Length: 266
Image 1 (cartoon, helix red, strand yellow):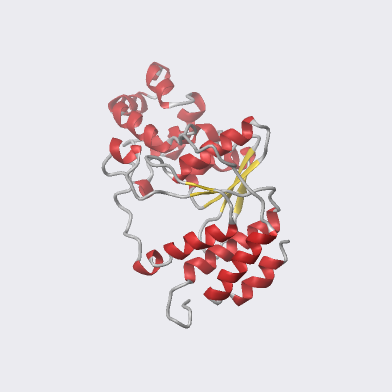
Image 2: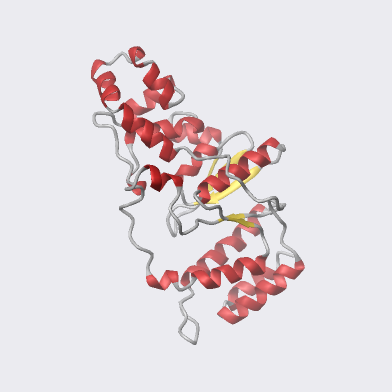
């Protein structure tokens, strides 16, 4: 998609359409965004090859980032971006704070790493690939898919690897063996401290041989919930003022079909 002036808008349109759908269906009391910063994070400092296999951002997408900032300004939802941390860590911190306050949280994401945050008060709406329906994960849904509680997913990923983040797997350990180990041990520290309790000799030898790799991988995979966030409102509801500002930008971007959906929200 492009405007009549030739500016690309496909990503902006998709983002806006999805957001309006979420606001209509979920009816949240408040919304916040977490955004990655361009600088390296503590994960890149710990492992230089972290996410090293990912392609560069296409130029047509990069051209839309400035307008995305304008869109977020118009919506006036709080957005958080902290140097040295990923947006996922910010979301983990927001979810922890809201849970401590007794509030329910829904994280909308296309990143499976977020499933480790699922708890009695935190659900994850996994958006998945384009054209496929979103999947809502609560604790039971995570266990049904992976066979382990959400909090043990970092150990599982450390064992089987994560190609999207360029995190290596432990040789000789597949999903079934990893699941059994995760049911037995809550984290990598516990696994490595009690390797004598691993009955299978080959499995035990593989874990011992990859001890340092496992420690490093878990550090990369486990989300941080202690990000130093600014002292500002954690979320905000959509207001008539923000609808007017967003409508004006939609008109500029020629998103005529989205305007009725936007105005129906207030």
